[in-house]
Image (tube, rainbow, N blue to C red; front, side, top):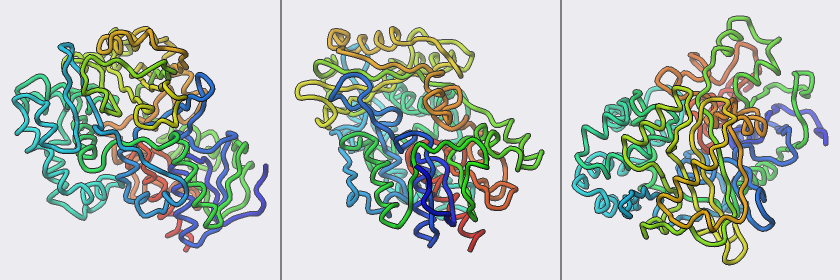
Amino acid sequence: MTPSTTADAVVVGSGPNGLAAAITLALGGCSVIVLEAKETIGGGSRSAELTLPGFIHDVCSTAHPLAVASPFFRTLPLAEHGLEWVQPPAPLAHPFDDGTASVLERSIEATGETLGPDAQAYRRLLEPLVAGWDDLAADLLGPLRVPRHPFLLARFGLHAIRPARGLAQSLFTGERARAFFGGMSGHSMMPLEQPLTAAFGLVLGASGHAVGWPVARGGSQKIADALASYLRSLGGEIVTAKPVETMKDLPPARAILFDVTPRQLLRIAGDRLPAGYRRKLAGYRYGPGVFKIDWALDGPIPWRAAACARAGTLHLGGTLAEIAASERAVWRGEHAERPYILLVQQSLFDPTRAPQGKHTAWAYCHVPHGSTCDMTGRIEAQVERFAPGFRDLILARSVRSAADMEQYNPNYVGGDINGGLQDFRQHFTRPMLRLVPYSTPVKGLYICSSSTPPGGGVHGMCGYFAARAALRDIA
């Protein structure tokens, strides 16, 4: 399929950021065409029958606290276009070897009841952030700028800038709370001894209380489908099976926005970019990869801790020391024997995901960049550790190494699903330090992927801010 007409703007890539950029441009009065290399739209928000017929699995993202928190998505009528959120009773559980679990409940008080002696310390840490969540999210989910709520952001920043392990050990006296916070901070894909890793734990904890960690009914594909439906209602056009290898593959447009990482931008438009900008893009740093498994199951996962059956997401890693050791090993280029695992059991709360009486589960662990190692046995051993009998329920599995993830989606360079390392040096300055990080030195060319602020996650804010920059330039 080819575009029917030229347009004011062309967006390369139909992930959440690409679609968010296209919608913003259309709302700004531009005609827009989205070009997608694959047959289906969605980028990191695709779903498919990866194992057996009738089992719907999320190819990448699956639990979506930042999607429901997104200041941009919240302005869109996505429910009218088929998107329905399913909220598990508890957003998160963190099981322990003694058969109990710490649980992130929507209530801070109820969460504290699962944290032993640290209930009050946890409340003091999270309560101000949850109370001001909407304001905090508006400041966090964007580029570096003058904050609208400086005092709240400063309160967040005093803790967020710290290493997660140090913060957990200084604030909490018991292992339950320390491990619980470490598990949330492990989403950073960095050693928990590094600065800024605490920010991930704070954001995910606060968002769990404020908005939950829901899944999309029917699969994450429904997020992309709803965005696409709304874009088409605004007059936007989406063309699939249209790979863009060079600038010659693009129709004429006043603005071209790339939902790609720096490596793909160099490949497509490198000959148009100044040498200095090319060198900085070439120096952009990517982080660890992931090894991912999707399971078709003959029944629900038999967790020893009953509370785990109420949670959409599980962090499997045991103690803070064990989680920290797993993440340090990956940083050193090693594969952890007992990896820290993120697991989501969608079908417990969304029965559309599997045939009646059957279930789905999704999990990944961090691995060194570009790894081809098969982590299936190690991941399943960790699940079995907290849910004896799990292996007996497996009907089929689909696995992807870090190298497989990149082959599936070139934006996952080395298996990095975050669009690049998001450490202290490369958090707000992604892909490099510029007054407007979404613009390039070439007039009319922009980057709108998670390689720009605020980084990874299904929230669309990278695309929104990139499109705003383009609209200012072409107005």
